[in-house]
Image (cartoon, rainbow, N blue to C red):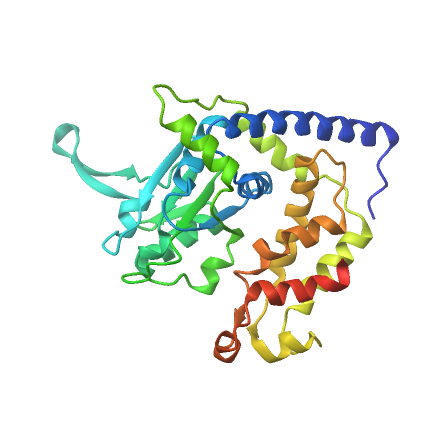
Length: 334
């Protein structure tokens, strides 16, 4: 059994958390220079990166999803690359491939040429347009942080994050993401339209002779240290119990909640609990607090659970939505 931390260790941890909170304030301000409105989207994206996870952004075209990823690469100092997913995109187009080269004395050898996945921040644009074979290749990279090409493993850079986008409207020529790949995304963020004031500021700021540019506020090493610190943030027993209660209540057969038993086909697995624990810690630090609360769990329930649950055909026919089911699950925690 681990010994409780000393007062000196506790004070040092609190100092690190406060310093990180100040740095993250600078990060948000830099992002806000070019991304107007979308406060929740920016917050949940930063939570994902702080927790060391991957993010799925779903929204119609023109909502600055690509701009957000480009801005994050600059502000966090990450090596960012983009892949436009299409049905003819092959795994080698993402992972890389081996080419045969002529060496000295006429000897031939294979040389591995790295693909765009060898980046610290990879944007997979319209990921559901990629074929299942290509999606599977990306799945290995997301889960193992390495790729296998011609029987050899190649480690990916650290930190490594995939930020994928998806258009919810146009479904022709798409391949729905399998449940196993959806589960690898820490959060699913639904990107909505900006409010009137944000759209007015965006309109004026982006159509003039000059425009604001984001400035770097962190380095990749800073981000890795922040991710390590997030895992050291203390979590109270009430928050742990809230996470377990919420996730287990979403599983048909053991939920006991009528709307779940009648309308949910399958519910969230243990990875959802892990995601809630890390994301709640990250949200607390992002808000300048030293420990997460049950409110953090409730606030993150939808982006963490909505892609880890499935409704029956009857539920969809009756107009039942996953968000309404998750809201019902959160009622005992409110």
